[in-house]
Length: 168
Image 1 (cartoon, rainbow, N blue to C red):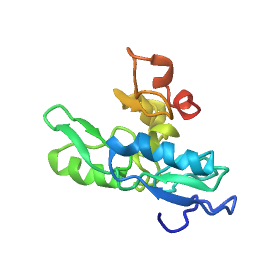
Image 2 (image 1 turned 90 degrees about the horizontal axis):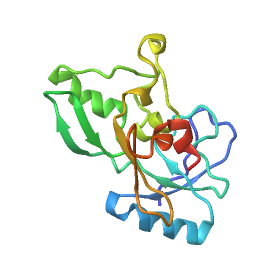
Image 3 (image 1 turned 180 degrees about the vertical axis):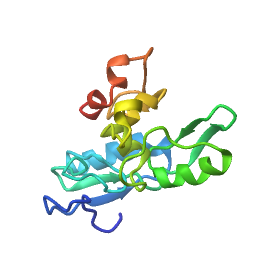
Image 4 (image 1 turned 60 degrees about the vertical axis):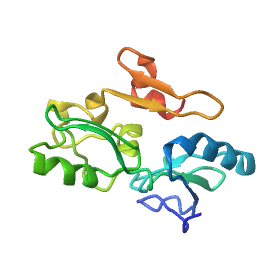
């Protein structure tokens, strides 16, 4: 378990006990173990949410920060597959030297990819480029007691909308 975690805005002032997730193939087991002991939980990225969206009522969250690896990268076409705990800063550190930049960046580079998607963040150019979710081709939604759900414009399109995935 990690040290107590808080949201970025520190409101409400509710400490969260993080349960480390270190491998995607163990994520379902982590979810089951946490829920068996604490009944509710949420994934917790880097705690950069302004409000309480990253806080669980049980006070127990799945700390996703160690899930920060690239799965695949096609730098020729600017398409990457990565784990949800990677921060925008980490992605940009790999992308910029290769001539790529994110089409949408929020006010902080320390948000995780999972958090950016779950909150469908936007940048100063949202009137031109839309939100972060507009540039995600597909993602895998992992839910308790269910097989992973691929979400895209073709597969499970309702859940590919970030606001929909947030409550799934």
